Image (tube, rainbow, N blue to C red; front, side, top):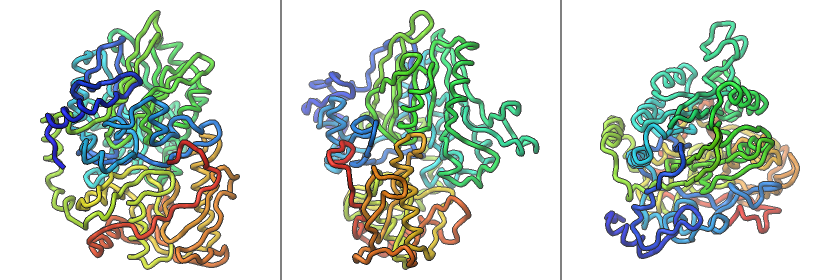
Length: 582
């Protein structure tokens, strides 16, 4: 559905929808005004994260399952749908609700159009910088920027490096950036005009002995740990915190000389050192920990004014205030796929932060004109790849999406493809949180498939596994997702399965969460029996099969109308009245 800008604004004014912050109603005026932020305070930080290389506007459905337990139950980010909107006092109708939730997704997507797009994002960034003052504004990128599309894979992330240079990113940290070869990572950082920060990445002693590159050979820091930016006369310290579990969640073979970790003790030492020596007005951590980890870090590390976080793709419309020994740390998370831009304004008095305002702005491409320079770059860069990207593979029989603790319909199609092409009883697919959505009736292109699958270790496999091995895999991922200690959560979702049903109790102990495993036909999975299992994205050694996108494309071409056969979603135990499920 195509809608003119004038028609869109008139419709929204009539609807009288609510703004992003409580009490920020915009009824009776054009929605263009939602991007007009009055100047407030002394310094403005703009924050984007987890765009996953989506340069053009896309559809992206938010989860209907994001469970939290123990101290996280009923708190952001573990709120979905109406519970999330109620918690933040946001109207259930209008673009804000659409951006933040899955509610009535397809109808709302047709009404409000696509989200994100770097050309539209640049228009907003330039507007906010220009109106507030470029000398008072900083643009921060939380990472997961160089991966997630066909063009980023084929250019080894360089398409996104140049896009970020045009956008004007000042500082970034990383995660999926490290899934290229270490030499490619370093090459891309040299091409990046901003600063790449990561206080928690070290070069091994053996590698240092062999003269491996390092930002500081004495401390072992692989990258610059922090920077000082002077904005409007105020010294702002920005510390980088890369994804701490990179060599566990992704192949270590690509980055063998680097070690990662949360390293909150070293973070505290660094914050204390910066406070003592740099005399900053504010200390900000640009994090890719995941929001639950950030909330815990904020409670145990003092002296941080704000943690601008990413990794778990949580669009949270308010800064969460966390108390600690120094007083309070603000924790935010700015969603994913280019859908949002976080805006944090600081006010200072007597050399320290005395107040703040935070807004999470959705990026609606219908409401923001495309920046000409950025759009020209995107079109030119994509031109050699268009024939491959635009290849039609089939028609979506229903809404195809990824995101949610246990499954997504596009995930299920991937699992169906693995079983069909590999002639397997069971299929396994990783619980990645990136991947764009396709509306029912729309043509599925090769680009859509690449948006779901494009990683640097895409090879598939098919092999015999015992029932015991399959259970161990499910239990391991479940513990990662539902461990009571956030520091043991790696931030992904449950492994997706095809041809397999099971029951899951998130609150059970390690190794005891998964029960009642059975095949689609009801046959019970036996621990000592073997089953043919297909999968992809092996973290250890390279798998022998074709890239997953070729497997999925082959399957889709044979289907014409593409839909999932059966949604293999686990039967959940002990989740009654949890506001993280709808």
